Image (cartoon, rainbow, N blue to C red; front, side):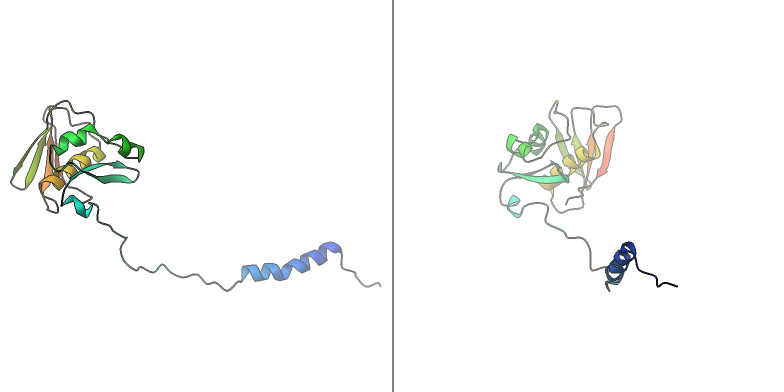
Length: 167
């Protein structure tokens, strides 16, 4: 009988065997998820908004976004419905509000701010509703638990109670 010889394929397989074993058992063990706290948070409204300027809420790349305008006073809802400036739009800021067809009126009673719009409100998207609620609450009573009701010209349509998720 003649002794068996190892062919080139067998030699290649044997040469790769240690590399395969090394890669498969590199010594890293799996671990469980370790909870270390809640998600990171940041102050949504710039601190200098309190010293001067008007905060409006628009739609940004990641949802609702506060925008500080240098206007010290004025009709916040008129500014909101006018939409972002050209510079703000170039930065990716937009609005979900339709163009305003008339003046908006605000009133405060029993812990509720009522915003009466001179247009239909049933078709406002949730983000458009948040734009109004957050802008109004920031101008009237920032940091409170007040809620907002939005009424319009459509029959028996009101959006209530709305809070500001960013505040």
